[in-house]
Image 1 (cartoon, rainbow, N blue to C red):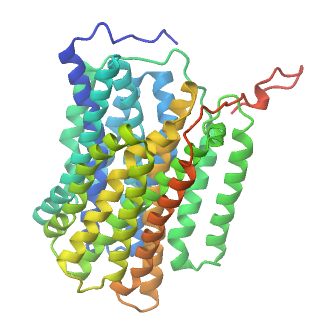
Image 2 (cartoon, rainbow, N blue to C red):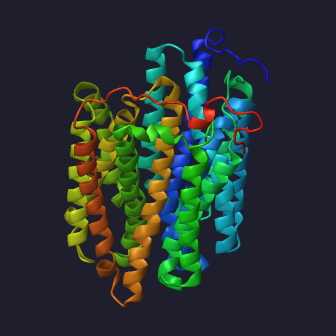
Length: 486
């Protein structure tokens, strides 16, 4: 492995800005892909004759694979070369998008979504490493990361409108074809402008830990999504639930004994980090479940077109964009406690309004609920990261950030799985959509309340540096006793 390539001194300012633009393309693609897809779900359901669980898998197959591979992709970029892994991710994501647009049925669509997700897992963590390696000055790096966050918000805002226009004008397959020119252009620009770089001391890969993470997330999600259809006590459902539990226990035991684990369990000794990870799950649980349920409600119950449904979701996306920088300023000036309490309160109020609604709920009522949900999600993101990093040793910051990112993605997948399962159970009982979805919105309300309680518990006192001792197996080994390896 050659020495790390230094880019900070050699690159001109225009070149660094070009690198930033290429990296921001990846986050734009990933977030646009998620929001565009939600608006297209009802059209997919009609065209592919998909049950509700099929729509859940179309969304969650992508999110689960993305969440499971994020930490592996970051380590692979540090070891194999960030540009190389970034280009491989762009190529796979673009290929997966092409195949999704050509999918003949639901099963192939889900399979091709997995291809997309494998590519997407190589984009955001590796692109962030490229940005931090390119912008060495703290002020420049902060500006670059701010641009990165703004692009994420723009993708979320324009996604429902772009998706609605494409679905209504061309068809749902066009939402995947949209990725092709953007992905190919980014691939060419990455090869031309992004220099190669590696970490001086990359972390060792952990295939056993990676396998256990995939089994845990995949089996748990399968049991939740398929439970209403196969029965909660069916052998397949119970078998997946048991497999997920066994994978969790094995992961806890195995990772605690490794010298360089995929999931460093020592970071959870920080109460602030543990609370922030739980809040990340809650916040993105709300986001994923909200988008999934409301695109179905607006088009299947209120009979809105895909374009109008996208416009209905615009208040949520706009408030997300507007409150994100406000949240950053509040966190910088007052700490994470106030914005997180406001986020929890807004989410609780928005969920309660949605739970109190019905099929004939007025537009003003809906817009108010959507605005509150957007405020809740927008206010939570920055302080969650701040609370997770507070008191964390510098050598553990990268691992902690990767775990929080994984928590966000897995929380979003759980939101689609759990709230979709609640809706399916209600529909199977013979009630209408508006009544069947009400318990799901009470769960959203509970998530908002959980954010408030977690904030009060995790931020009671200022974060103190967490002393993270080396794992027991890091100590000198007796002769003939090898360190556990993957």
